[in-house]
Length: 387
Image (tube, rainbow, N blue to C red; front, side):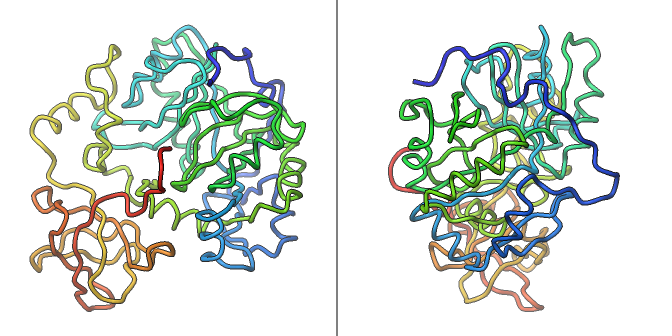
């Protein structure tokens, strides 16, 4: 079973040195040299130099995760500890989900909101015995911290940014659970989806989280930045792990119907418009930012809704391609690719809510040509069996 109690502070986050890269300079994760040594193509992403793919290519990496085990360096993600008597009340004030409903050892997906209910970021909330851990997107780290600090008044709690001291590896795929268990000091079979435990992996203290961004089984492993290399090496030494870059991470999450900030979510979108109504707890005890706007949208409906779609012809819908409903422009493609698993073009976009019904036809402008498209249910791909 997932633990009902936990150490006061995970060793990963205790007494760690903080670093402050020069403003404007691209950061590197602790595993940068290993990516280079493996021949990865390195690109700027969210202020970091990140591997987009390795020599085998995006499709091979994608299929390795769907059929075996892939590993991602996602150490660019931000981690913020919220500590103090009002930590839960504060997080409930600024997010749409209900952090008070979490038990120790549980994780929650949520959205960080403004007064107008638009999304500052999507995030994970981890409940520990004496604090909450927020995991935020790297591209939004400074913005998120400024937003959180701007709403601290009146709450007896404090924020601690431990992002630069923390590394994060995602081990994903049907073979991932057995592989991680083989190196772990604690039993993992009882850790439910969106729960976590603490122990060591290959002798390295880790927060072991039953979460992921691929639609597959797996774990996300948080450790001290100084230990990231040894953890990566130990997992690679099993011979059963394929290193994966951001390219296949994007195709995997899109197939699984998962939102990406800057695509499906941005500062003009509310969670109800994005189909994330299950993250909005209108009746929770703590009033929260954007609550009244979301209450109205819940009662009256939204003008637009995020949908999944496929094309009726051989073409690839790229982000930014125009969307036309009845020949009239209506926004643009938010994400799009050729699905490596399904072998068809897939994408997301917003449509008028009345048209956001599976089977509805519309068009995508690809190089000046209106390519027929139709709405299909999300997710595009779902693995067999329960999470």
